[in-house]
Image (cartoon, rainbow, N blue to C red; front, side, top):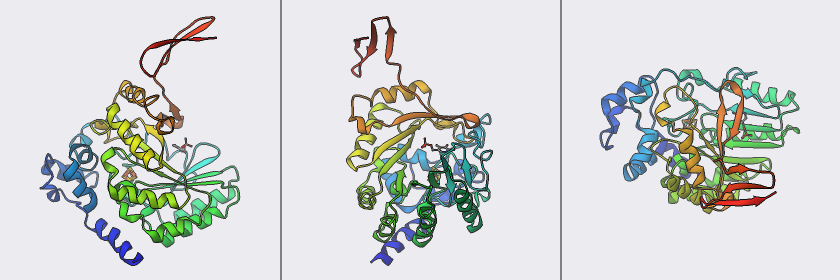
Length: 350
Ligand SMILES: *Cc1c(COP(=O)(O)O)cnc(C)c1O
Ligand code: SF4
């Protein structure tokens, strides 16, 4: 049965549209433009997302079908966050003292058009090998101030079960590593990957957290909910990192529905990322005002547990900084005038 489950996700993945002519049935897709874009940025739309996208339309199409806009702007940078600069060994970024980003896979179940690692994903630049994984683990081992390892890629859960287990095993044994986070978009893009066999393996690792990546409430299909249920049973706390995307989730009601859907499935919304200035993704970026308006529609309106932190990632490696709608309207000696979640003004005595 587990064997069959593994065949399932591998077949769904094998059945991916990677050439523009495969988009003929997708309404709104421009085949010649898509063909042009895929020469620079590859496309992969697996059979699961293809079906879902045809049902849901625009918000899912935008995330997966190449747009000519990817080639149009030139002011943005390939690596605005300077991940390469803070990279002591290939595939590892060490910027904050106590935590690292560790790339263990180049593969993704879907190539998201908004990907911040567009320079690497699916292209020859992004080659993770057994040697880079060994070098990364050796660096983490000898650097005792690292307490949190973010295992990412690409998507770590596209590796085979044994390979994932092997990496987690080696990281778990390092005593100064107190947390291991897997970053994965698979629950949204290839939920059948979350097999019982995989979850049996994940269960063993007590330091493990799992951060998912959902951008739209329509991604929370029955299959995705089942995947989240299995992941929850591994005991790893589940989070979600969402990217604020123009035309996908830049309206407060859409974002609120997503956050409600996540918490209903016991996934804690962690971050909403303002779109980074990554080359080829400028058409997804909204204004900061839009992001703040989205946040205004969450805080107070939803359970506090459903409200993530809205962050911008500073260029040149300054790190993530939270942004909040301005709530203090006036500050006086004996009182603050503050805007409540309902938009009305209140006086808070000092
Ligand atoms: C985002 C990020 C992290 C993790 O930051 P948290 O706020 O702890 O989630 C670590 N290193 C780099 C370089 C990052 O960009
Ligand atoms: S799954 Fe993550 S790494 Fe892969 S293309 Fe999407 S955003 Fe990029």
